[in-house]
Length: 276
Image 1 (cartoon, helix red, strand yellow):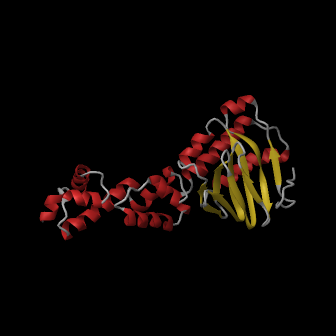
Image 2 (spheres, rainbow, N blue to C red):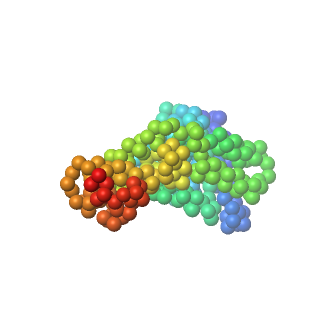
Image 3 (cartoon, rainbow, N blue to C red):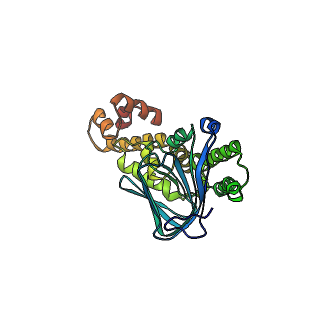
């Protein structure tokens, strides 16, 4: 049916679905879904809408605002929002996107896996399969066909897996990982959270770890340790600081953990390395 919503054009469509009790207990299920073509005045701000929202931008741009942070949605991006919490998003000049408000027993676990912080999650460049799967989900509603809830649930599972947990690693620019590498170098003495690094790259922790290893050859934790060891090497050779102090200055929790990591990496103790 045609959407009669401020900011949407006459070419926008919205469909509603009342899930069966069985579907609510077992499956992923849509509450409403559609395709919107919007002007600059399109805006949504709610305290709550009990569901999760998936947005796939086709053209133009949208903006999600959450806790003072701005999340830009560009063509090809996929965004998932926990609408059980206050949420706000709007068009930037013009915006065309497909969307699904969905829920289900596994909806929150999936969302938490992609975004442990609970903030809106955005995949900057979703794989091509996302648009195809979205079309397969929306088509039966647009044609008025009988809705197979098990089939729709399977498609939503595929959509979440491809878009939120896997993505297309080849479509990410090296800049995303280069920014993470620079952040690690600048903050090596401080606690560095994988969640923080993944959020900076707008990826799930699972996907970030895979992309990071493909780019660097190391898992994020391994790379952080290597960076701290490299810093320790410099301090051991250029200062007279005690090993315990260097361990602290390089971000290790204790002298013992520092010595263990140093020997594992170099084959030497810090003291023998310094004495060379």
